[in-house]
Figure 1 (cartoon, one colour):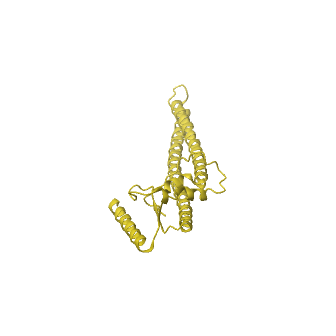
Figure 2 (cartoon, one colour; figure 1 turned 120 degrees about the vertical axis):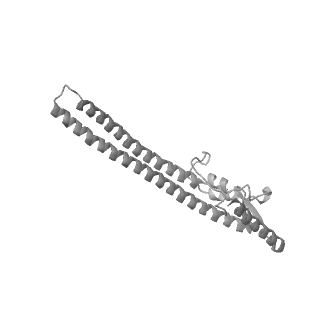
Figure 3 (cartoon, one colour; figure 1 turned 60 degrees about the horizontal axis):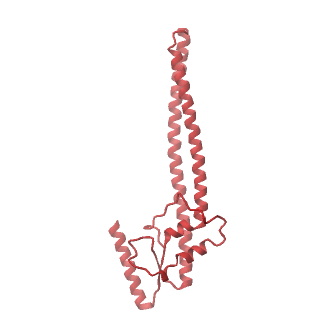
Length: 204
């Protein structure tokens, strides 16, 4: 996979060099990771995702607390079922109640594990959809700015294997980021946490 990526990048760069020589093609670089993390919509989406995580964690905690309470009741019933101070008939009733409580606990544990798996899947899907939409927005803005500035090709400088050398004169990251954040309703001085971006598969 790594060799394939290098081959593709080599072909792209060679093609760009050929075009540059024949048609004065201008090549720019942009740091997609910096754009992704600095985009105000990334901060907004991340906050929303964190809120959803908090809601799911609370639901899981409530379920876990319920299981703990049921286990305490189960232990109490077992202790009572073996208490010689009460009648045999009553001990049998407590033992039957303990068995029923044990089945209830097992069902609750299964429900907890299923909910946890579903929550993990849901969060992963939401995160992927969020990232894909944000990357699409960023790529469009990169393309728009590149056209305005006269660049025909833009290479992702966040991928260390893609760039051997680039001049700061051809880097349009800050220009694109400024356009992305026009009218931002969020505080851009706060760092983004909990976001991921794979530079090898998301290039403009």
